[in-house]
Length: 148
Image (tube, rainbow, N blue to C red; front, top):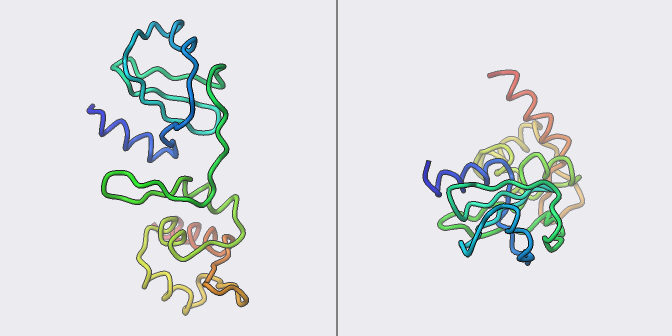
């Protein structure tokens, strides 16, 4: 597998590029010399793509703590990717923006508005700009999964 495949796999699993400081003592037990580390993180798990070893650590000491990002996007190559997974969006937020609904349901903007008009998604009445309830998005995910 290429480094690009590994990066896409990690991003697909909800990992993010790690932007914090890593203490030099982290590398001694891993046997890593002066290689260039490329850490990705998700919750308490860290994965390095800096060499072929693909080191993986859980809750390690020596990593600067990072606050979870719940709404920003990260620019990666040609795509603007949410900094959280689809599951995290619908479980941690009550109302979702139209682009977030597009991401979670893997549909386009016009399809989201069509689903709102059909009553399949619930738009919050007092929210300019438009917001859709996470509950209705979860309901749509469930019915879509059942139909398949």
